[in-house]
Structures are given as structure tokens and as C-alpha cells.
Image (spheres, rainbow, N blue to C red):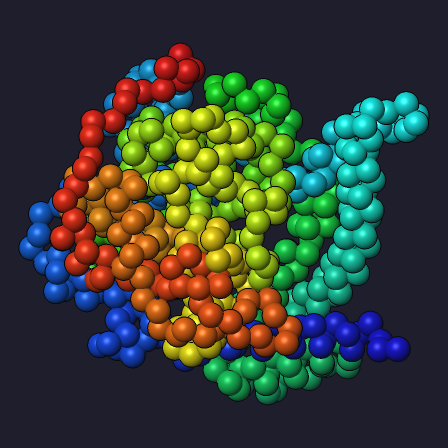
Length: 550
């Protein structure tokens, strides 16, 4: 049997290898590049601005980022943040009477009136388990109705899943915790901040502690390949925090964060809760998404967003864990009522107990001509209407009501590789439920405290599409949401007809059309050209939601 210590270092080595691989090869701005001009399967953003949009008149478009929060003071974002001009900052009064006090840059639906914020949450599976536990614990199963018995069986399945997952996570928390301690030991022994530790320091490092010596050898090897000590350490901490968060919060039935908000999470009609802290405690994910959409272009700072004429509205809804349906529904309505023309949703989960409330909000956005963009997920699996939420299919539809939201775009993730590896291995897919692919690996964008970082996921691919949708709405304001979607889908590029099937352990290769409706990657240049040839059909939007809290 492999020793625990050796297993620890094999895990670390695998993770660090992945980190090195992500950081090599593609230019930092690869996703903006054009394949014909640059040889990289980007989305031709720069070419579109240089050749088609230069000097063309436009209007400013509000894009809502429903996410973990946004650092609205970031050097590359603050000029493009949405500002509620009808609200007087910090006076404790709902000046514009939209139901939300001092909502200057958006709203936080996972915060309390006392200023506290939810940072970690259970998964939906755990919340449903807790709900059913109260109902079924000690119940006489033989007396349950057929419907109740089915729920009881699901409850039993969830109980086993939670127990199994916690048994799997516990050792990982211990392993990575020990590894972090080893890295901290190296830092303490050298006596420098991690950012200042050099290859020379590592070559000279000696320790009688076997754990520290093993760590030093691994770190030295990667530093010889160009990595920094700080980047290696930060990657390790990210993985450790992932496992720790999964164990302590996501899969822990005894953890309850909703008391911070102080509402009834089952009352979907309630909208008057939360606070105006749109950044929250950990805004890395949302800030990165916001930068992809709308980091200020050509300001010689950081990076360029896809959209040039944009204002980012932060609607904080997504914790470290599963977002709640009530919050998602209210976030969509808030964004629509406060002027968003595009909404980005880089989140998702495997169950949706209050789906009808979310569906109602999606209909509300569709009726008001708002484009909704959603990331397909990062499980390397085929999406269905039962395993991935939210989705564009309404749970209830009448004879004359549409079954699907025609303003919805579902997005998978692509890579900088113009070969069968064009599709990201982690990306979810579906021939009829995912619409397009967009760059989602090695994406360099804004993170809090005026910093920048490479991240990957369909979370990064969705804002590429949101940025494109905002660009089309800025330069072609007469286009409807449905027209914007149609143009984005008809203008995709098929770099490879045959691509890797995400998640396949055998390396299976399939037609790109097996993975998404269009079988292609979005392209700004092509979309703008097509928009130039498309007469707009936009009509006046309906009035504010009559159900909005007063």
C-alpha cells in the first residue's frame, strides 16, 4: 500500500503539473485574437474593433453580473461600473423607490441587514436532505403515500451520497493541510515573504524534516521551469481551500449560513432582503467574470474586456456552494428592473426545488427583451434538463406559452488549441442544450485588489458571450434579444469538425455538433458583420415589474 506521505506528494505534483501546463503556450490575450491573422482560435475581438467598429456610433449597455460579487474599485473596472444615478449614496434611504436602499452598484441577495454576508453555503442536495430529514426521520415508511415514499427514497440516496462524499473529502483536507504546513515551514525557514523567495533560496535550502525536504525538491523543480514560489504556493492554497470548503460547508448538513440573511428562503415572493455590499467577502470569481465582459479597453492597464461601451451591474447571489433559487429569481428581476440588457450567469447546480420561481423570472426577462447567458458547467458531462439548472426550458408551459426561453444562450468552454483539443476537457456539452462554445481556459482577467489572474471554466466562457451580446446591443440597438442570440449562433466558427469528447477517459473524438447546437466557437468579427446586414425589430419594453417590493 502507498504511504500517506507519498500519496500527498503525488497529488501535489499532479496539481502543479496542471498549473504549469495552463501557463504555457497561449498569448495572454489569446481569446481576443483572430485565427486568420494570429493563428489562434480566439473570438476576433480586436479585429472587429479595428476593421468594423472603428468610428461607428454606439450606446452604453448595462450588463448584470449575477455572481459572487465584484470589486467595483478595481483599477480596470471602476470606470465601467454601473452607477444608480437615482440613488444618493449611503443615506439609508431608498431614494429611487425600487425596493433597495443605497443600491449604488447593484444589490447583494446573500447579505444580512446587519452588514454580514454569506460566503459559504450548502449544496442543494444537502439542503434537500435536511428538509426531508425533519420530515422522514423516525417516520413509518409503510404508511407513506406513493409520492412521499419516492421522496423518502431520494432522501435515503442523498444521505448515502453525503456520507460517502464527506468520507472522501476528509482525508484530502488532511493531506493538503499537511502540505500547506510544509510550504509554510519552508517560508519560515528561509525568512522571506513567499513573493520574494528565489530559485537560489530553494537551491540553498536544507532541512532535517523529511516533509519539508520533499516539498523543497518539488518546488525547486517547478521553479527551474519558470514558475515562482508564490504561484506554486497560491495554487496549492487554492486546492486546499477547495477541499476544506467542500468538507466544512458544502457537504456539511450541520452548517447553516442562511441565518445571516435573516429571511425565509422558502418564501419566493419575498424580495425585500439583502444589503448593498456588492463585493462581499470573496469576489474573485465575479470580478474575473466582470473583467472579461467589460474591463476598460485600451487604457494601458491590465487587460481588455470584450465590450467597449458597457456598465457592469453587480448582483451578488452566488456563494461558495449552491446558489438558492429564490435569490437567482430575485437577481434576474432586479437586473431587468434596473436597466440591464444582458445578464451573465456563471453558476449552476444539479437540483432546483423552486424552479418555477426562476422560470417566472426568466419569462420576465424574455418579455422585456433581455439576453440571458449561462455557463454550461464544468463536470465534463452531457447536460440534460434533469441534471443542470437553471435552464432555458420552462417547467410549465400553456398551449400558447413558449416551452423554452428564446433569449437564453448556453455556453461551453474552448481552448487555444486548433486541433482536437479545442474543447476543454472539463466542459459540459449537449447537442441540443448547449448553444455555442467560447474561450474558457487560460483566461487572464481582473481579480480583487487591482490584480489579475488566469482562471478557467465555462464561468469564463459565458462572459465572452455576454461581452459579445453587449457589443451587438451597443452598436446595433434596434436588435432584439432573440435577434442577438440568432446572430451569435449563426456567426460561430468551426475550427475543427472533430474534437475531443469532454470527460472521456478513453480520448474519444466526436463531431463538434455532438457537443453544441452550432458546432462552433463564437466570433465577434463575424457577428458584427452579420449584424450590419440585419434589420432590427426592437419594440418598447414593458414597464417595471408590478410585483416589485415597495
